[in-house]
Amino acid sequence: MSEKTTYMRVQRQTRSSRVAMTICVMVLVGLVTMPWWATSGNIRWAIELSCYIAVAQMWNLLAGYAGLVSVGQQAFIGVAGYTLFVLAQNFGVNPFLAVPLSIITPALLAVPTYLLLHRLDGPYFAIGTWVVAEAVRLATSNIDYVNAGAGLTLRVMTNYSQHEREVAFVILCAILLLVTVGGSYWLLRSRHGLALTAMRDNAVAAASQGVNVNRLRFVIFIAAAVGTGFAGSIYYMAQLRITPAAGFDPFWASMCIFIVMVGGIGAIEGAIIGALIYFCADRFFGEYGSAYMIVLGLMTLIIALYARGGVWGLLQKLGDHPWFPVRRKLIVEDKS
Image 1: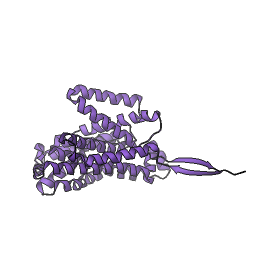
Image 2: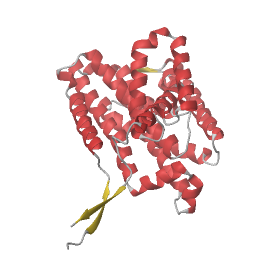
Image 3: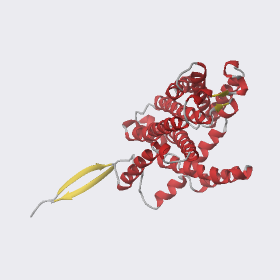
Image 4: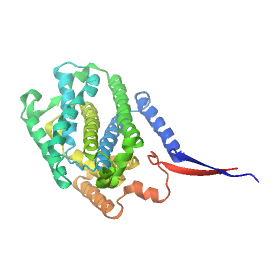
């Protein structure tokens, strides 16, 4: 009689993840080639959606894993946008090269912000981030070098043709998605991702098992600030104008909360689904003004009360088909 041998292997990739990865590659290729087949209006939509996904993904990493609920991420969007405009308009730096340089400012702002607020917890931390964002907005509104409350216009963009601008924008958006979505996926699959998942479930228990919670939160806060600032600089470069009211608009925080809560907090897929829902709703129902905002608020409230896992959580109840699997499954195989 033949004896059976038991083999065990760790599975991370699934059929659904392979399909998702194929679709992601196709989307990125389609995005980069848009200037040769899409209209300028569609390219503008793609830029906007890419920025929404990136900002929401960073907020999801911050709140969904590190447990840091921020309502002041607009501070990093605004300072990155202003840095881009100053470098390009006042110092003559190529605006497309100024985009990666502009993310230095949010990183520098994030360090003292975290050191100032890290002892606060829960709602106190959230309020603290909003206060910092408002303080930066008020300071910017009173600095004559950046034209105070009147804002700045990126006039140097007239030196480039529309096609050149569109090609540069879609390449920057592809890099933005790779850095924010791809970077989050890489991080969550690493050993640090295990620590982040443990922190998401129970920060006290994670600390008792040797996870340096404070240091990891600090790193995630800086990373989220950089990714958010990256998206902000691209967004306002496409707008060609920035003002303190726009760059530091609390709308950015509200948008992040809606996208992540509706899509599904603590999941890469949730932020993407939520961004698509918000983008479509904004495109088709934004003209209804205050009524539209009330509907979005009620939708967020209903999701928070009755489906805390968001749309992605509801989809997972129909079957475990992750797009970006970060869990490890032990598969036992019997072979003769």
